[in-house]
Length: 226
Figure: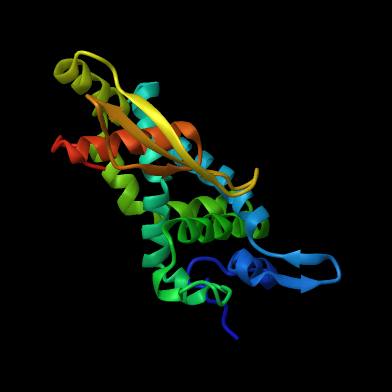
């Protein structure tokens, strides 16, 4: 049977591809216990950060640290990874449990599948093939981040807006957390001017606040293009 990821990487060890596409809801049981893609996702997340950081750092435009941080956050966000996962049709290839709807997988599940595939390719072929896969499949997101370039961080732009409109800085409230230590997510809402704005999820508190500020700016009609 042809591996569904052959279009992007020819695996020497097919079991790595199989495991990368196995969500926790459909974990494989064997003598070593239940096996799914969560550990591979952890590795892929790290490789992904390195590849995108390296690509942005090497650009001829010498972005400062703040711009680099903003651009990388855009490219490796749950939204961006989920979009890439859908483009390369990972939902149709994934092994999922009965509790999940293949046609309506959450952004988090899709992003996790993508990261696990990156981890699998790294384990099978090393950094070179993993880099090639990431740059190929996240091309539109990387191009969009480069085009936006030096624009202000959402948190910075939102703070400036609040200082001007409300004469006080915004605050952020953590509403929920989910997942375990290896796959934690935080739900945070921004507050300003006596209002609580639409909340947003992130893999870290910092990332969640980033997207909460972005949601607040959208709600206010501020130009906060991703």
